[in-house]
Image (cartoon, rainbow, N blue to C red):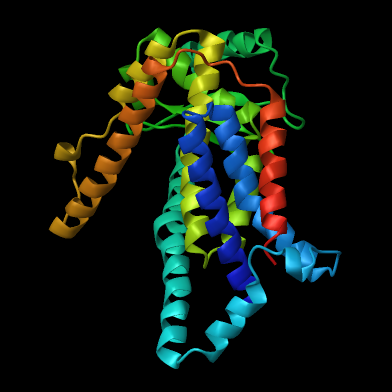
Length: 320
């Protein structure tokens, strides 16, 4: 077990360094390519380990870049304080995943499930318009149930794609009332872009990959980078379909949380809410800036992805 945990950690660390180097050398990477590379980076280490577990042919020992078994032996033979520190690292990362990611996501989904959903004529009209825009740029509907759109009866500023087998785009009444028509069109286009890029079925696969690597701090970094990259990708796809990047940027800025209006009952909860709102604000402002500054929203040729994927696969293959 230690060998597999260590292999996963070393693989993802190498992937992080490789991706950072690639970004530094190549400059800004288009959102579709960056999101695809991060998805591959999160899943590839698990595939390599599964390959080893199944006993399939591997790289000769003399050709390996890193010998995981030697690293594992070093940890086994180390004094117990060092072993304890390594165990605390893995346990701490697992706790971060549960407390900061799994539990809040579950609670958020629970609130969305219990809120009333109704048909909204203004929202439906923009949804039909945006669907036609995606068809014009060549997007084909994923297999499975067709997505629908509904208004969420809450004053909170919410827009999301919910449901796995029965996908629904929900936009809250508070957000609908806040946005003008072009801004609302941009928000709907963003959520529809999530649907065209795998929807919650794809997101579930990402969460599963993260869950299986819960003790791995490098996987934690990759996962958070990937979630942000998916948002940036869907912003770019929405701008490409509607040809109105400034409208989506304006909608993002309007949805920035106002910490001054927090109604949390205790000082600790208000401080926690302030930190979370500040992080969300920075993310939204960053996304808006990328929309305004972008010179093109066209995805690069798939050849770039496969070339990078081949190089990454060869690198991981030499770590065993």
